[in-house]
Image (cartoon, rainbow, N blue to C red):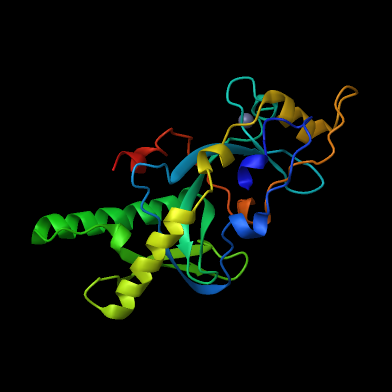
Length: 233
Ligand SMILES: [Zn+2]
């Protein structure tokens, strides 16, 4: 499915990803998710965007790093974005959650807290055993998201075991390749997004940033390449 879409080939004819069935889009208020246990497969990917300056409306490109035409204009700093696979309880499916550093920091805190409690109590535990509550606050709020640890899914409780069993099935059926989704753009692609088609390129289908991928806040911190730290677990 999503593998048919190649971010790096603006000139190629390709099928469009069904964004509504791939990306997570929380509703205002409380939403429940659980982080997918990658079991060796990547479940978190990291990329960098920069906001194009002073366009008619906010627009983002994926930073290509050195030689990035947006960064070279000197008006913007690139910011970290992340893709994380989650079980979306509202849709009952695995989705890709796209977020920035504010959410990443809160998730890191939950992960660290569970780890610390586990070490202190000597009872083996992981943040992957918990539901995660994603609270989307009204538009313009800062922070826009408040992420908290939800209930523990203990297999001893039949209703919770049912959830865990169903999650296992979802993982078996899951085909979303988030590394692929998070591939950096080529310079050609960035230029296309900024300036439109050059004379040689005639894209039939312009890949656009999914609605949920529009950063709702502008993180000001420096970009660090620490996004893959969860992958080592
Ligand atoms: Zn850039």
